Image (cartoon, rainbow, N blue to C red; front, side, top):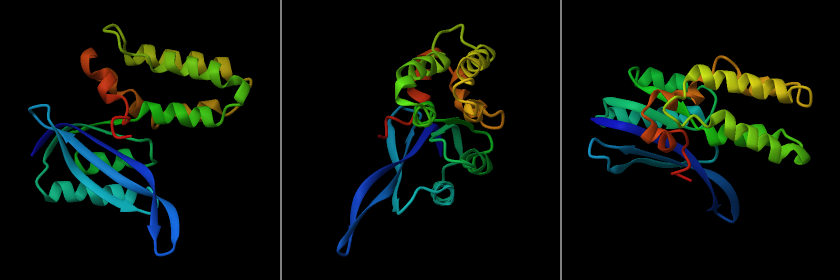
Length: 187
């Protein structure tokens, strides 16, 4: 019934269907129970990753009896926060910071990647006891100001509607922040 945290992400693997091969999304969902033990909650495959498949998977969890989830950690797929908060309205939602960093770096010129990556690490390095969301927003603003001359649309990666979901981990104790700011445990 109760999980401290549920992690969800897709791993893309090569699948043979008949005489052809393609990369398909394997949906992996696991929960951490009250005894801090991991339990595999869902495993399914679909040709692509979509929020509708995640909604189906989370709905199945509710049907199977999951009622209370303190935190859901998933990747940055669009509209995922709406699905999670609709099905588990008392939960907090954390989008994967590592996915966010990768997406920003995909839009970065090769000669700038190392410097941008270092600055992004600083933006999301909120693991000390004096870290606050306000300080994190200030770091984001500093980052955007530094890079917007080279990358005019850099701010779109930090839009006000979703950026808060990349900083939820700051609301939790320092000892668990590194464990819950990413879905890399699945990958």
